[in-house]
Length: 88
Image 1: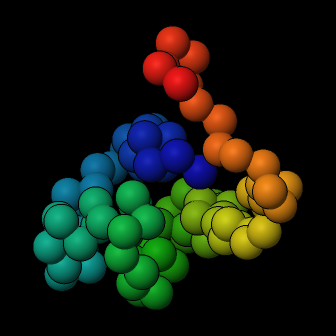
Image 2: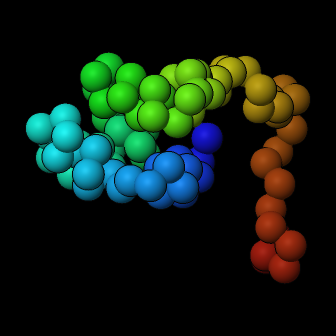
C-alpha cells in the first residue's frame, strides 16, 4: 500500500502518525520510516496494522526482486547500435 494511503487511513481513523509515535514511545521519524517501508519495526508495524484492521502483508506487500537474466543479450558478432544522428 502506498505510504500516502496509509497516512490517509490513519487520519480517517481519527489519529495521526505523531500520536501513534507518542503512544508507542518512539520517535515520529521512526513511525514515518515504517510507514514508508524504509525501516522494519515489528512493534510499530503491528500497531499500525491493528489500528487499520489490515494485515502487515496488505500494508507492506513483499517486493519482488529483479529477476536476473531478463535483459536481452546481443547476438555474437553483432556490432553495438549507434544512436540516430550520430556520425558513423
